[in-house]
Length: 263
Image 1 (cartoon, rainbow, N blue to C red):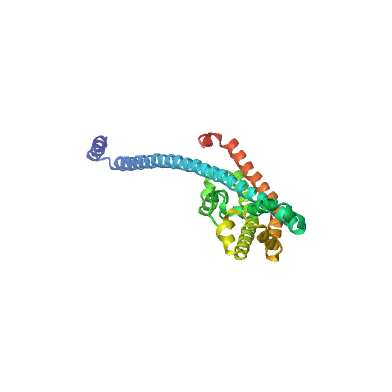
Image 2 (spheres, rainbow, N blue to C red):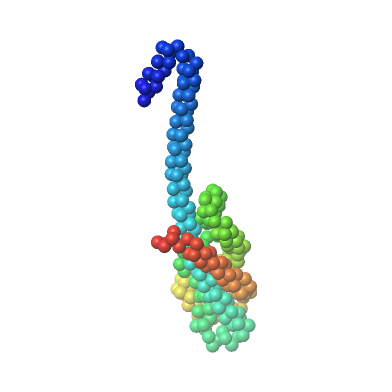
C-alpha cells in the first residue's frame, strides 16, 4: 500500500502538479492520523473492556466477602446473646440467694451452677465472640474506597447502619467481660488455698466457703452489675442487632443470588 501511494506522489511531481501533490500529501497525512486515532480508540475500548471485567470480578469478590463476614458476625452475636442469657440466669439466682438466706442452705448445687454460668465465659469457644478492636472486612473496604465498587447504595446504607449500631453496643459487652473478670478475681483472691487448687476451676465449693462469698459486698456488687447489664440492654440490644444482620443477608440473598449461589 505504501508503494502504491509513493507511486502516485512521484507521478504528480513528475507532471509538475505541485498543488495537487500538496493536497494529496495533506490528505494522506489526514488518513494516517485517522488510522492512528481509530487504532488508539480500539485499543482504549479493549482496555476498558478488560478493566470492566476485572471490576466486575472484584465487585463479586467484595460481595461474597461481605456476605461471609455477616454470616460469621451472626454466629458471634449468637454467642454473645447466649452469654448474656446465661449471665442473667445465674445472676438472678445468686441475687435471690443473697437476699433469701434459706436458699443458701437448701440449694447448694444450684448456687454452684448459677456461679458457673457467670464464670464459664472463660471456657467457651472464643470464635463465638468478636474482638471489639478487630478490623472488619467492611471497615477495610470502606477506608480503602473498595465499598464504592460494590455499586449498591441500599447495601451500603444497610451495612453502615449495622456497623454503627454494633459500635454503640460494644460497651455493653465490654462491661460484661470486665465485671465477670472482676468477679473471678475476687473469688480467686478470697478462696482458701485448697479451694483454689482443687475446686475453683471445677465450680465446686463447700458450703462454708460459698456462704462466706455470698455475704461479701465485693461479691454482691459485680453479680448485681452483671444482672443489670444483661437485662437493661444486653440481651434485647444484641437480639435487635442480630435481626439487622439477618435483614442484610436476606437482601443480599435476594439481590445477588447468582453471585452467592456457591457460598
